[in-house]
Length: 58
Image (cartoon, rainbow, N blue to C red; front, side, top):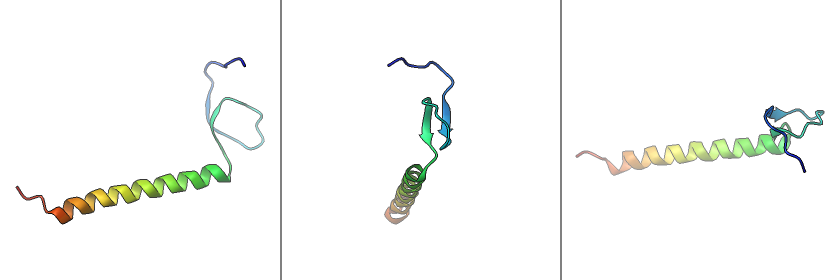
């Protein structure tokens, strides 16, 4: 299998036959993105809340 250099696209449309892409535009990618973003927001909120609840006043 020969690797193509450069010309990578970030998102591949459904009807494209290209092989040089990072994400494919479909339901699985959208669902995965939503899950990852929700998890990151949850982590950020948890870190903020732990700082507020431990009351760091030195």
